[in-house]
Length: 583
Image (cartoon, one colour):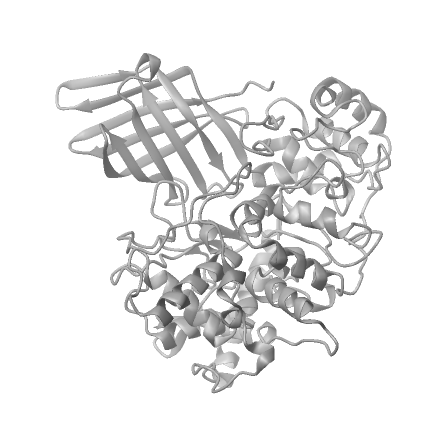
């Protein structure tokens, strides 16, 4: 979890190492064979009619998100083709694209960094590349990876190659065998991407996959979906989506010291590991969860990007809505709501401290810095700027989400609308804490004024910086032999996540008025010191690997420096400024 002390990390790592010999004695091979038969309770999505599993490859009008790839090799056999189409639905419902894709590279080619207290794990290439992806995996191997969290290969010779639990196999173990095979059928139909996996950078002994056996023995207990007697078909479908495919508990359930979710607190809210975001309580609690929301309000939030009553999704949840939930048929999201209504109500974790002294200064700062967009009454601007008043996501649980948004800013609610500016470079820790405390306790919001300067200081290095690229102080040139092109204009954005190993950038460099553009799109590698992706020059696209250096001034990210080849003997040297304008 964010901010875990180093001593605690060492204790966990040491415990894993100490338990390795004991684990070896207890080791048994995890189930590798699919179930011989599955009843109606585990039939899964592949039994649903084709019309019920249609999803859109492109974002709906007014919604953000990425295009999902269509099959490049659709099977001629009608049954196999139907399986591929069901697999497409399952991949969208499982929200696989954001984790297994990065800007500038083919979809599902991997490379996305996931921070943990023990180091960074990079998502693998899951295209059908025989060298770099899963093109050589058998059905049995794919089943083991999805259901048992075991990849092909070994660790320390005699142990299986256990997956790190950042891959939500703990939820996917509830998927039916038919659905897992449909997912593989869709992935096998895609164009292979010759992109090698980025190596994980886990600290010793967590870098030894064999050591995960102890964790698995304690915390991984795979089982089929368990449905309560009397649940309707819709509730059962919703449970399957929430518990297995969408793996909602991976974020919305708190974790223990070993980073395992706590079953007794299922969906009661939790910090997202190594990030500044808190996933709120989504149990059926009327005071702290979704119990007081109408079905229509939840549907609008999950499928339409929110409204001016309950607010809008942000952070990682916005990606889930943009790339997954908004693409599903309406009845599927309604089934999710039907299931969430059955979840036992739980209270959110209580606030640890209450600081009321900063409320007066918070009110003044809010009116100076925030009211021009969100209004003196916190009501926002219809269909553009979400409301803060009565917005449960603002006041429920700790203030981490609000603090993180103030620190790093936020993309527009919907395409073409206003962005949330980043105030981390403009306001002190104490000022941001004061604003958060005022907003969380005003206009009927029932939050605790629990943010302190220390709270903000702890979240600063975890925030996501999302900011426009700025022509103002940019210097950039592209050389090829003795010929040198100088650029005077740039358009694009950069995203740098809190762990600094995950960044994405899209940029268009050009002469004045956009002449002869060079387009760059890529993502971080090598602990944030490389930008790997694609460069498009004169209509031709080339692979690129650039050295990346983040330029700071007084803890403020002001520029990125890029150097390296763009293919065809071309070399780029650029110092790209980041926009710091706040309004």
